[in-house]
Image 1 (cartoon, one colour):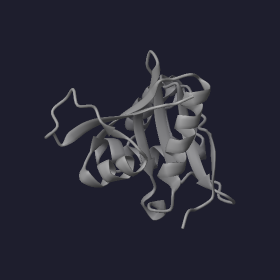
Image 2 (image 1 turned 135 degrees about the vertical axis):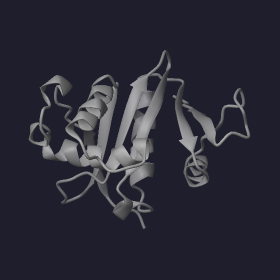
Image 3 (image 1 turned 90 degrees about the horizontal axis):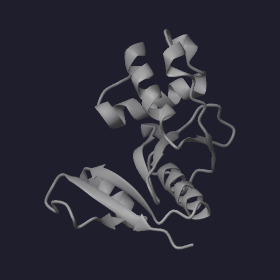
Image 4 (image 1 turned 180 degrees about the vertical axis):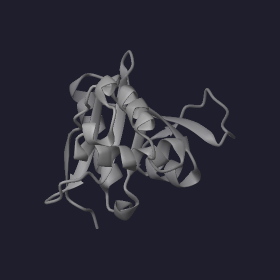
Length: 162
């Protein structure tokens, strides 16, 4: 069963003004704690790492958060950059407590919808691991055959019809 979530733009403070965790809005700090393990494989421990993540997010086209209806904190987050005629989903992560409830699918459908409204040709992303690959394939993404098909890291894309 899918969880009903609200998708919104995540507030990103100026990374140069972040000297303490208290300098980061609570919702954004929670999102960083969700995305840190997905990117770097461990928990968010230092303000320096938080500032590094915020710099990357500040350069993104948009950063989305998904939060369950009635909840204040996000259950998922996506960092999306803009290419020439496509979006690059650099990072997407779902809080382990909410995995399998449709949060990731809702984030990806929202990114696709934004891409269509902005006349993007495709959504691109890089996958590491079989479970992630299966998730994206269920959503209609398929490998870019230009790379090494036997690699653990697989580039995927999905063309967007208007």
